[in-house]
Image (cartoon, rainbow, N blue to C red):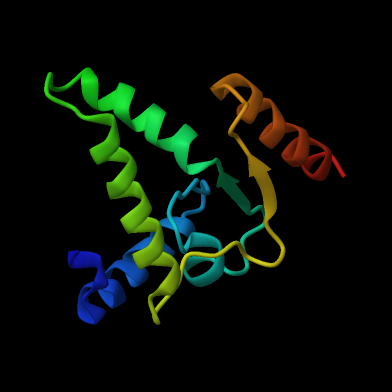
Length: 126
């Protein structure tokens, strides 16, 4: 993966931080956003789901783009990516200590959105 190259990671880090510091704010998504890119972000969410749920979602997404998608291949690819990302020495995949953990295995998109809003709105009005 290109993002595993230290020079690329460093360039991306500077760019991501610049975007995050935009006066209008930003929503960033990634496996190291809350721990490395924006450790001081106002809100951090660690969105998780079972390997099987994520594989099923990705499988359905890929089926819309191509006909020859094999669920088992998608599952194994995600499993390998998780293993690689969680064991890398630079910016390993892990939730930030102060992130709100949301397990989306049994949630639809609307439920996830409502959960996130339920965290942000009370804090924003305080």
